[in-house]
Amino acid sequence: MKKIEVLGPGCANCVRLEKVAREAVEMAGVEAEVVKVTDYGAIAAYGIMSTPGLVIDGKVVSYGRIPSAGDIALWLSE
Amino acid sequence: MTTLSLRAVRRFHLPLKLTVAVSVVAWLIAWFLEAPLSDWLTFSVFGLERGSHFGDAIAFFLLDVPKVLLLLLGIITVVTLIRGFFPPEKVRAALAGRGNVAGSVAAASFGIVTPFCSCSAVPLFIGFVEAGIPLGVTFAFLISSPMVNEVALVLLWGLFGPGIALVYMAAGLTVAMIGGLVIGRLRMERYVEDYVWALQGKGPAMVEVKLTWEDRIHDAWAYTKDLVKRILPYLMIGIGIGALIHGYAPTDLVAAIGGRSNPFAVPMVVLIALPLYSNAAGTIPIVQALLGKGMPMGTTLAFMMAITAISLPEFIILRRVIKWPLIAVFATVVTIGVLFVGYLFNFLIA
Image (cartoon, rainbow over all chains, first blue to last red; front, side, top):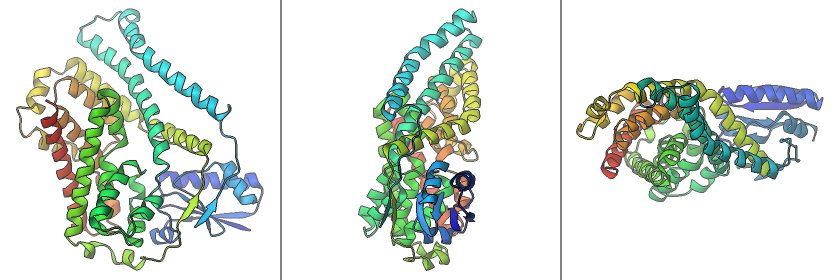
């Protein structure tokens, strides 16, 4: 079971990234849960400043952009 | 430092280089065909009379909608592509460990190229403080980022050439550097929320994500499309108002209110702009029409900058990390900066 975290205070891009992440989970066909992290302190603790950020199993894979569902699916199946 | 690389995922239907070449050629053709085409539509197809109020307004509208759209699409894509190389995370690493003066200069310069939206103001602020960057340096960045606005650059560069665009950039830079130094001197650290200090030094090492050119171009284009789609309604309204001003507003009236002879024109337009907060793109056509009616460059710029840089929503968002006195100082410095740019441009461009 993979854990995907979407980092962002709740702006439009964060909402969009969450949607894309859910699509990617389906595309990759893996078991994963998608959680939103909205707390500023928690976001800062990952060392990123540009939102939205994407974390898979505790590792930052992207920030400041919305990767495509295909990219995220690739990362998930790695 | 962790480095991740993506496996290539094809994003465009055509190979990358061909996609870029086709887009550039299409843009250039549209740019050069646009003016004669709108002229022909207005005066030959619609049969409107040249020099009539209505004909001029319609011609302005048909000329401006595609022109501003083309400028926005072209220049924002390029600017976004360049800015992609300067994410705040990199800027922070470059600024950490610098003193107030060198830091403020560097931070203000980075503010031009670093992508920034008011929704990331708070994570950005926390990230800077966490890395031990002095408060003044952080504010030099926070002032420069919205002051030197990419869309304002589009307007200036596209409509008046690179010279004025560069002076605008230099003016914004100066204001940000001085603002940063002043805030640094005022020792306002006590107005930062306590929990922000508690986070200091807790973050892990910076993460770097490798992007390919294809990723970058795709991102820049996606961002531009999204931005233009979002501002299109404002743009149409702005162009509509601009067309009305262009066709109907008497030149004397605009010149009398905003003209050079009125020394209070700059603070007046800033005051008018304070409650207005809009995307700069929506203001471009209004600004262009006002310029056409004889409003001086500086006054017009001050109006536009006040609309975009003095943003109430951003001040309210920043309240999560800093207390009101510091927000007040920040707002004051930005306002003085806008006034300064207004008077400077009126003085420079006679």
